[in-house]
Length: 227
Image 1 (cartoon, one colour):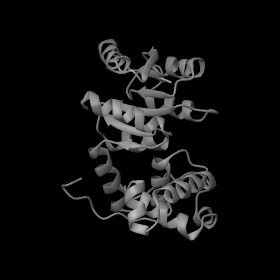
Image 2 (cartoon, helix red, strand yellow):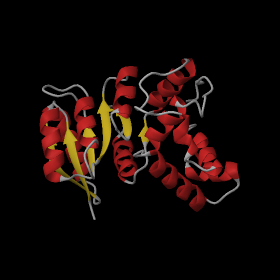
Image 3 (cartoon, helix red, strand yellow):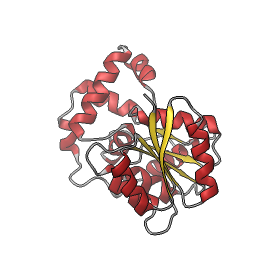
Image 4 (cartoon, rainbow, N blue to C red):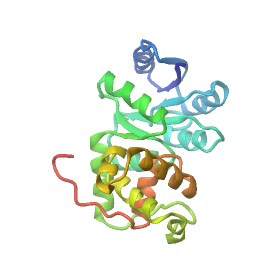
């Protein structure tokens, strides 16, 4: 079954370019295009896409606000934010609004397609520069804007193993790397990830990472040039 993708960008030529790249894939279909956030919200409800490729700066309603509305609905699609503006505010606001990924528009076509496939499975994807900024932001000190009601009590619902997986997940390790670190199987890691997401009421690994930092479960090392 093809992944249904909604492409949102206020520049027609950019929107058409993304749509052409996506539609050329056997496992993807562009079900709609929108030039602003208002249309994106409407089409996301009407067309029920699996993934929304979302621009940030648009008229009427920006991509961050549109993402917040779209992901707040039942059976919401995944949102992959794509922008030319690699700014801290956009990265953090997009992720907190519910986006599952953040890439820059100059990304290679293969990376865009990979990103769409990744977020469609419930995983997350971040541009290296966005990851660097995210880690650097949390390494700098306390973060404001945690989810309402978030606190240590949320972690009390997790088992010790699930807390360990959450801490490693927040450092950017994938399931195989977490399994190696803890000496367990990849299948067990997947079970722990699914359980902790459910218990904490989180959509995906991006939200889990942000919450882990907000609650102080993980403190990153200052980012190095290799990130």
